Amino acid sequence: DIQMTQSPSSLSASVGDRVTITCRASQSISPHLSWYQQKRGKAPKVLIYDVSSLHSGVSPRFSGSGSGTHFTLTISNLQREDFGSYYCQQTYSTPPTFGQGTKVEVK
Amino acid sequence: QVQLVQSGAEVKKPGASVKVSCKASGYTFPSYDINWVRQAAGQGFEWMGWLNPNSGQTGYAQNFQGRVTMTRDTSINTASMELSSLRSEDTAMYYCARVWSFGPGLGDWFFDLWGSGTLVTVSS
Image (cartoon, rainbow over all chains, first blue to last red):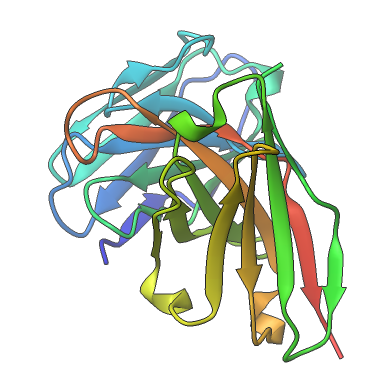
């Protein structure tokens, strides 16, 4: 199975900050990488797919980049509604696997 | 409204089985694969398997082979996941999720629609 490792596991940020979350795969998975946001007690929602494609209806403050084994999710001008947990997921091979998550909290 | 509505929370004893349902509405149920994913409290996601609602074909994660069965009833637009021989480690939130394919490649997909989740608690 492909291992997905996110960093940091948690971070504190303020409204208006720029936040970057990193996801590393145990082998090359380009371009099959998606990002999800999960609020407490809710199901996840997709933000980014295919490394950098913004899902319909998602704020352009979210952007994704990367290739090979190294990927990043960037949130520009962090808003209060962006606080929650973020997960990367690879769909390069079965089983699809997720990172362990990054919790973004209010500073 | 396009949504997946899951059955309610369950409490089971070790060794028992649980069946979780996922009712689709607002779209053509047979046209999209349904996957099942679980999340233990404070943990990440673990993929359990997939179901093609049109053909009934399934594929299961190795960790669940022999214990999980995924089925569908197209007459009521519902997918179901049954997990047997439950143990305490199976305590988790179980989600169904719809697969959206955006390209021809095998990896060109993501989960675009998730159910609300079903909490399964295994306790003696």
